[in-house]
Length: 116
Image 1 (cartoon, helix red, strand yellow):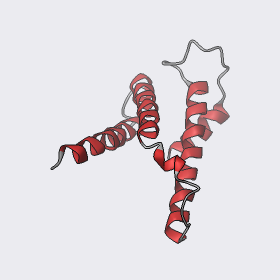
Image 2 (cartoon, one colour):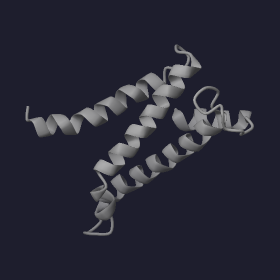
Image 3 (cartoon, helix red, strand yellow):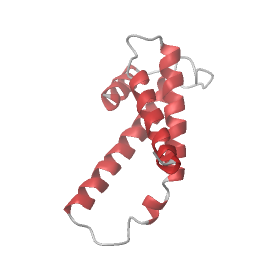
């Protein structure tokens, strides 16, 4: 396997593993769940930075059915990740506990719904 292909697969593979580990909340304690989620968001930022040309090319070219569906799915994923980011910071019990934000059971439900 070429080195360049391997490099391009390491980041998404690490993100997939962290996603599965973060979804194992009921088998892990809260602290590992929050650490895995925080690292996942950091890797997501790195992934966006590495693939920033995708955003630059959004307005170029012709939109057929496949490209439109891909764009809609990406936008839904971005919206879901933003909801997860905001709710995770607000309901954090370990990693972001130093922030003076009151906890909300409703935001826990929103976080849970967006994650699954």
